[in-house]
Length: 336
Image 1: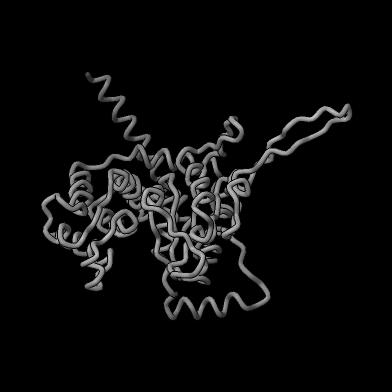
Image 2 (image 1 turned 180 degrees about the vertical axis):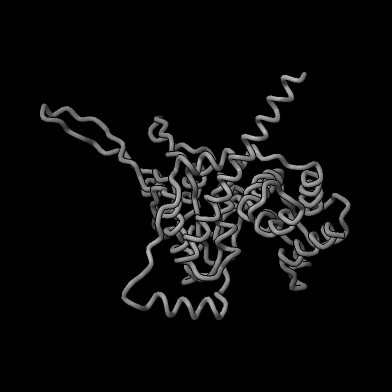
């Protein structure tokens, strides 16, 4: 018995030591990103949380708010091999995944060779994902879910780690195909990107229109990122926090006894929302310089984790309500 106890405490000590090292790495990552991306703290935080948790993020905002710049900056700071795909209505699945080409050797023998597409990256920027046809979207989303692709019956594994940061314009433009609900659920977080605040916009004007432009340095590499992602999964979560996650996610589903949800919500989040919350709450604790997640992490993450996993009834939309209003109400109830 004593032996087991000693092993457990050694384990805890090792986890605490690893967590403290991760804290300093994450603090350095934050500092480096802030040299290039001004303001937008919650956007930067939630995007980094998605990557630290080993997942994908959907960034939603009007064009020109530095969504692409944030992704390329993260690629450089995290030391990941990054690719970018600009989605267009005529983009085909093979433009993303790759295709087979026919080779002919000196003796005239022909054979097929697979040429990898841009999906073979560690950080993939999928720009304006809602502009491509559903067929092309599903090719990418399958890769996101399964971490491999199949071409002509042959399986090709994607590099590790593999993260997709997709952007989507909220404007109801001609020629956009909204992502189906089941595919939205594949994204760990939906990050809303708003216009910058005055002080940040002033800084953008002054810093980005001169001759020199700041280039971020690599703080960690892919191997170190995988270590931090493993650590996130090892962090203990208290019973209180687990209960809070369950009650918040379940309160967002109609038919579970919450009167305002029954009235306003057509369908609510599935178990993936709770899984996302468990991972992101641990990552957020590290990001904020703490060794264990708290209830505040759950309340802060409610909107980015739940908003793309639920839909309002027609009556609620007619009254001008938004999913964010409903989530804010649920968080208020949870805080009691």
